[in-house]
Image: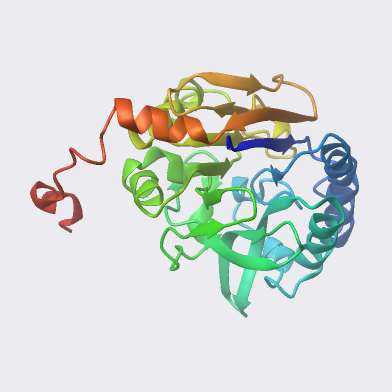
Length: 289
């Protein structure tokens, strides 16, 4: 029996000014996102993901301890609890990217994974943390992930998560494949300029090299007062052959969906047996400090 799964990605612009209170911003972002969650539910989406830290702006454009107050507990925080309700309502797997508080002063860039019955399955913490000019001061906010590269056995597929800057590192993308991922979701916040051409290059390459589907999510528009560049949207799905299945527009809030056929993974891996032909015995240099 074929395994067809409908997947969705939500990309939005910032719904409130960055000078508003953090609570106001969070509420506005959730209010902007929930209609797309409802739309996904009506359209029969089975796996859904939002953009990186979807409850706020990309505050890493500055180094300001004010944003430490944007953290939430996972899974006991309000947004994870809310999305558990929506997951159960629509029988939909939801991947929820948040700014996570483990304890006071220890914060992570994280995505919670919720199964289609509302069960919290676990979380992925972003492993690769950039700290580069101009405007990507992430080490000020995030501790590097310490949970490895987990794959979550959801009702519909085996789902892995890779967050934004992670996508520049093929090693973690490969480990997700080795851990059994069938669909890898990459919530991001990336702006036009130096790396834009990589947006449609790296993740199709990961999909091909590892024989799985990838969903890449970006936010939309400009975020003042920093204006580090245009968040250019263009969230998309790509199949294990590196072919684009669907892509959102550059400049609009949107839900983008794709029907994926998980049986294609077996077909592609039988054609390109990269896992069979790997030589891990020769790769020691990759983990040399």
